[in-house]
Length: 212
Image (cartoon, rainbow, N blue to C red; front, side):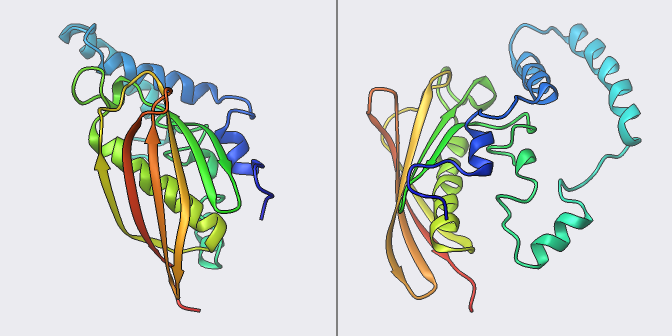
């Protein structure tokens, strides 16, 4: 277990200490441009034609259906940590994943602080993050803390209470802490704050560990 305040391997990459992945950066930019209001129908058709040729050259008309290979699955079957297995392609913090959101992760003895940056890909109302992303991040944040400090398991329940709109284009800080532990169950609590410390949302999680 890393000491309080340290950043371990996956966290180091998530925090940007590793080299940024150029392909993920390009795909991120492509997604933003494709979603934005500036492409007309003709531009979209021409772009789709160009990309079809690129995709077809990768591995045929049908790509992989999972980011895990045979070796990864064998590792996980032996009790490997899903956060460390293929963490570079993790959809929330992976530097190779174009959808990665996390800019910084810090683990304490029983706490976690995660900074994220939402953009127009996560926008619901103008300038505001859609609730599926704003609330869903609690599953990642609190689940990561539970696994790191209490052991492997799965989320059984997450309850989110939204208190203010969450902005796009600005850093949002998610914080979590370990609460009551009873047998195989761990309860955790979390908050999401803007750059001024205003509480945007709170959450409570029930995390269940496997039988010994």
